[in-house]
Image (tube, rainbow, N blue to C red; front, side, top):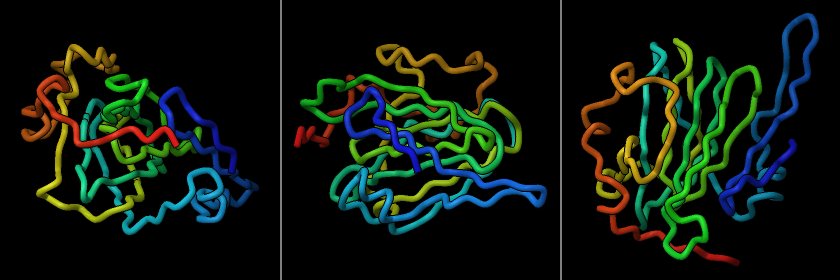
Amino acid sequence: MHAEELALPGVFLFSPVKHGDDRGFFSETFKARDFNAVVPGIEFVQDNHSLSSEAGVIRGMHFQTPPHAQGKLVRVPRGKVLDVIVDLRVGSPTFGEHISVELSAQNWQQLWVPAGFAHAFCTLVPDTEFCYKVTDYYAPECDGGIAFDDPDLGIKWPFAADALTLSDKDKKLPRLKDFSSPFRFDAA
């Protein structure tokens, strides 16, 4: 599995190998030994799987705060998304910056989103499935988020605002400037 560190420190794009023949394909989508060689000390406790039936569905920008902060390894086994993360780590040289990555069944890539980042995705095609491994269980008291359309973030979403579908909860999230981040950057 090839790994590439992206512009935000600690964020990696993984490219698992796909072996195909006339029957279809086989791929090892996760191997702890290989993952931990790049991102040491991570243990996943749960796998999640969602389906979005329409293009233009945004889920996020979500995170969990300490003591139940979550890292996520995300992938798309069917369909295509624009995956976006924002650095929320106080003291980080990239605090408040974001990156966008297209994840799809076709490119077969996975994104490692460490704890301390807000995460969202927007479906680019109908019937998109999104899978992710998490490092801690869901804790409602630690559930948080920031506004997907915060003008200070400058995220360029692939659809006009009136063509997007969000949950009521996600429509009410605060801007980054109104969020006091509990996350700290560790340069080590």
